[in-house]
Amino acid sequence: MFSLSLVVFLVIILTKSPASIQLDASMAATPIELPLSTIGRTIVDTKDKVVLLRGVNWFGMETDTHAPHGLWKRDYKEMLAQIKSLGYNVIRLPYSVAALRSLNISGIDFGIGSNIELQGKTPLEVMDSVIQEAQRQGLLILLDSHRLNDQQIPELWYGDGFTEADWIDTWTMLAIRYKNQANVIGADLKNEPHGKASWGDNNINTDWRLAAERAGNAILSVNPNWLIVVEGVEKNVPGQKLLQHWYGGNLEGVKRYPVRLSHSNKLVYSPHEYGAGVYNQPYFYDSNFPNNLIDRWQIGFNYIASENIAPIWIGEFGGRKVDLNSKEGIWQNELVKYIQKNNLSFTYWSWNPNSSDTAGILLDDWQSVDLPKQQLLSQLLPPVQVQSPDQPSNPPVSPTPTPSVSPSPSVSATPTSTVQLKVTTEINSNWETGFCVSFKITNQGNTKVNNWQLAFNMNQVKINNSWNADFKQQGGIQYVVTPLDWGKIIEPNQVRNNGFCANKLGFDYQPQQVRILN
Image (cartoon, rainbow, N blue to C red; front, side, top):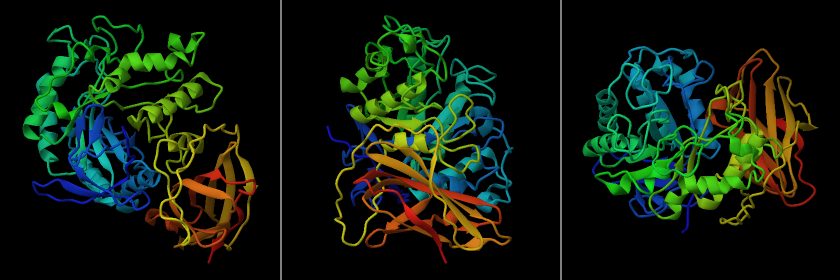
């Protein structure tokens, strides 16, 4: 079974015909057609081409801000552009029922760029804006009913002052609202059923499988194009084999009690999986750790894909540590390898740095990338091709090494350039077959700088992933770096960050003569 990892550019076609989508030119000129469906273990387009969804969770709309977080620091269009530039093709967008019924938003700096467009909008209208801009930039959206109120994740799909009808009515409203919004691909029905939630016991008050059928079929009756994404429970599954599961991670019941939808080719199952940094599960201390993880994942959820029942989309996984020494780091490296080997879709938790137990892909400044974490995930993402005119159009497949992340960054060069701009180069991780580099550009002057570029020389290297800028090889060993549109202006005392990860083709690989172009 072959697979493709897709970075999509979406074309809005508000007709009854499928939406035609072209892949990024760095991949291949292969169109896909929305909406998405399923065949056995795979997610496919209307031409039955396999689609792998590789993305991030950008949370905030489920909290009392009623808007995605970080907009107090960043323009929302900038944020989406950065997600796209790192190679992700989908965003899981959490919301609360309470937020979508509210008229108020907060936590947004309306003086930053395009954020002014959000001023005076309701939470639902903010969701519209984010989704529409995501479509313009070639990003898919999975909506996630994360909470009912703004404070906590409920055990069940009702409670906290809301009924089952409130939950389903919100879903049908969204399904109708975005029926012609091609990049909204589906509904993650309820985040992390747990506690009293059961599967397969036919208790009308707690059986999540039955509730998922009611909500899924209600959505499909008004919008048959969406994928219906169903998470697991925590416990209360007749005959379950494993003693411990994460909230939403227990899909053992699917074998005997599958979800039955009116459109069976729209069903996707979605476990959540975390490491010891979130909670010290007993199995992290088994004598055969980490070798015990593969059996756990197979029993807990991946038998569904292995037996060709339905696709698996890991809706959440993440953690602060990605090293090869800590329990959490080992677990996270093993899961990335497992996702890659089994061609699973995923959305990483989280894009946000303000997730207290996992942190995020972004660092606390809401702009810089956690390079060791991004390097680990880049093994699952499409490579960024940096070609000179004489390079072949179909470059060789890049190896996928398991990195050994350096405990602290090493400075390889610190050249300065113009009077105003200073650039610092850091090698953030370095292993036998590859490395990652970041460039920090600081405006030391009193006026803003427009349309800056960076250049450097580099030999015996193949760049396979980059962020926040376009890296172009201009013959020989020179590379020119052009920031993305949102990063072309640097205000006084502002810092811009970009960088890349690359495969080593020899011993002479470090960037040299790093300079700002006038």
